[in-house]
Length: 369
Image 1 (spheres, rainbow, N blue to C red):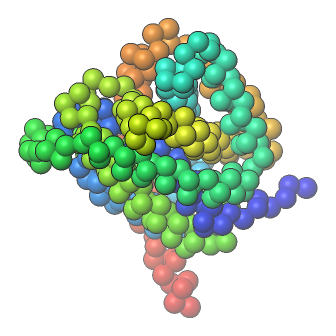
Image 2: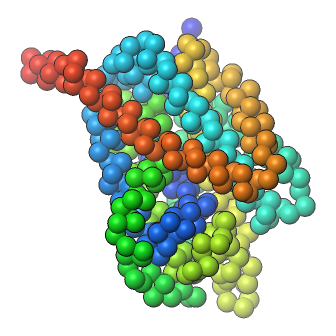
Image 3: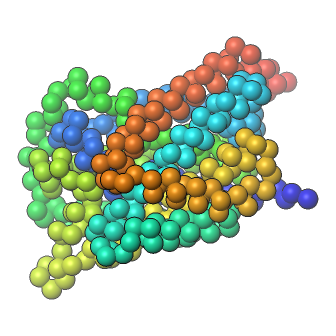
């Protein structure tokens, strides 16, 4: 008999969400945004968060009508069996592409900065194997580990950014609007993918005691992540100034520059150790969510057994590009350009479907009885 899923605590869920979405500050997101809006890059995460707030709010409002149901179950209810399956398949393809290209990016970071002589295949295989093992243990175990390390991940990020202020110049963020307000407004909608993880996390609703608990955890993590990413990019811009546009992974370049005086000049290994733990949790949660979506699509109850196979497929996809940096960056930008607006549109469509079908009215009448 299939056991009921173990309940996930709100603290563990917040930790997972912060590690998943907040990690974007330590990859190529700062450099990508700087290339578009220059020194005003730190504003984009705040504006994108404000824009994505509306579809996310409507999605959570819609899902509150169906207590204990995940995103896929709600789509089937509102859109019908076949259209719900088609939309779910699109979500799975986009999410699978994102995890393949993101995991390859992280492997490139590890090899470029820390293990230059180790073959990319070895590093990539080890990363995916560890994440697959963790995902197969279940989301409750992932949440427990996330809660144990999230404090150290956040503290290490703050510590690194504080140390960087010794060689930073505040004037680097001036003029405050960068290339202009219009350019910032044009860039913000295309950066909604920064918060796309919160859309996928709605698959975890059945693991909570109530939808209200899930919503509370989502909004706490959402606000924290938006501030964290914006603050991190602000500090990175102040540190690198115009040279930021030519860097692939600015955070890891930054931690190679900072030091604790002349006695401890090389402290990047300390930040790397904590960063890699956060990265493993991020992709572990991603793997679990993708396997859960796949299981829902094809009605596979014991989807956990599929995790090693799905992880292997992602590994093979990530190894396809022959020119890793240029190709991966191009593919990631394409996926990001699709993911954010697509997930926002699906959220709006679900809300409209619930409104047209009178689900909100039914719920109101039921509560008033």
